[in-house]
Image (cartoon, rainbow, N blue to C red):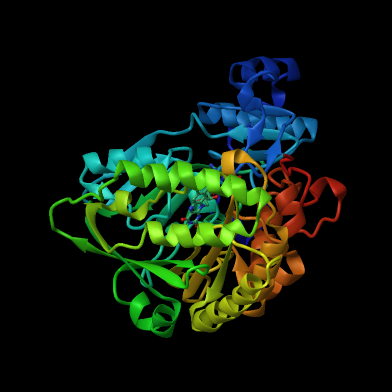
Length: 494
Ligand SMILES: Cc1cc2nc3c(=O)[nH]c(=O)nc-3n(C[C@H](O)[C@H](O)[C@H](O)COP(=O)(O)OP(=O)(O)OC[C@H]3O[C@@H](n4cnc5c(N)ncnc54)[C@H](O)[C@@H]3O)c2cc1C
C-alpha cells in the first residue's frame, strides 16, 4: 500500500503473514463460534425503518480484534467483500450486503475515560445510550446528539450524523482519533496529526475505509438542557429564521405544513433543577396508538393525511418547558418504522428553499389528489466542518428532512413525494444525508463535494481491491450500473 494516505503507517503486522498460513479449514473452525447460523433471525439483516433487508452469505459477530482479522483473511481468500454493520438504523441500504457482514454488536466496550481531559475511548460498536451512562458515571456527556441514542458510535461517525445548533458541527467533529483495521490486515491509528488523510476520509467514510475498532471522542462536563417549545406560524418563523436559529444553543424546528404551524424547540445549557416533560397517558395514547391507527386509515384514504397532520400539530400546540439531562432533551420519540429523506442545504439558501417547499405543498394540498406528507418536516442547523464527505463541509448548514411513516410496519407510497422534495433540494444545492436513500451518483456528488476525489484516492490506497465496498458504495461512489448494485436490490417488499 503506497500513498500519502498512510504516510506514517506501520508495516502490516507480522500476524498478517501468519494469517495467510492458516489452513482454510482451521479458519472456518476458528470463526465458527462467531458465525451466525443460517436459521438465526440475526442472519438476516433488516434496517430499523423496515425499508431495506438483506441475507448476507455469512454474518459474523466477532468479540475480539483477532476474530476481526480472521474474518478479513477469510474474505480475502474467498474473494468476498465485508460490510461492517452497526445496529442497522440507517434508513437506506448503506449497511446491506450479499457477501460477508461483520456486526459490531460484541465490539462494544468503553475502553478508557479521561475525566480531566474530557476524552473517552470506546470500541466502535458501543451503543450511544450505553456510552451516556458510562460518561455520566464520570460526570461527562457528549456535546451534541441527534434524535436518538440507539445507534452505534461507529455508525454515527461514518455517516456524519448531526444534531442541531448553529455553533455545533456534525458529531464526527468530536472524534479525536480512530483505530482502524484495514483491508490488508494492518491495524492503523489515525487522527488530525497521524495519517490525517485517512482520518478525514474515515470520519465520514461510509464504512468503506476499513473496520473502525476504536474511537476516541472529545466530550464535555455533564450538563442539563432547558428546552422551550412553542408553536408559531410559518411566516413568523421563516421570516425571522436568522434570529430564531441563533436565539439558543440548540434550535430545531418541526414544520407542520398541513396546519401552517412550526414548532420551535430552543435549548440552552442550564443549572436549573430537572423538570422532565410530563407524559400524560392520554397524550401517549393519542400521540402513538390513535395516530398510528389514523395513519393506517390514511393508507386507504390519502386525503385523510392532511387532517392527520393538523391533528399532530394540535397535539403539540402548548408551550412546554423541560429541564433534563442533555441526552434526554436531545433525543425524541421517532415513533414508527418509516421512509426517510434528508438533505443539507447551505444556510444562506434555507429561507428561499423553505418558501419554495411551502409553495409546492400548498399546490399539493389544493389538489384533492395531491401528495400528502404524513408528518412534520424537520429543520435543523449545523456549523461548518472540514470533513471531506460531510454535507456540512465548509458551509453553515440547514438540514431539511421528511418522513413517511409505515403504520404497523406496512408500506405506504412515498416515491413521488420524495422525488419532488429532492428536486427542490437539488435546486438549492442540497446534499443528501449519506445514511438516507438518495438518487445521486458520482458525477453529481463530485460537483457537490470538492474533496470527493481525495476520498476516492484514499480508498484506492487503503483498499485497492474493494474489500469494504458494498452495493451502496459501488453505486454512489463508483457509479456502478451493475444490477447487483441497483437501488432496489435490498428493498423490503410489503
Ligand atoms: C430513528 C432514527 C433517528 C435518527 N436520527 C438522526 C439524527 O438526528 N441525525 C442524523 O444525522 N442521523 C440520524 N439518524 C441516522 C443514523 O444516525 C445513522 O444512520 C447511523 O449510521 C446509524 O448507526 P448504526 O449503528 O445503526 O449504523 P448502521 O446503519 O448499521 O451502519 C451505518 C454505516 O456505518 C458503517 N459502520 C458502522 N460501524 C462501523 C465500524 N465499526 N467500522 C466501519 N464502519 C462502520 C456501516 O458500514 C454503514 O456504512 C437516525 C436514524 C434513525 C433510524
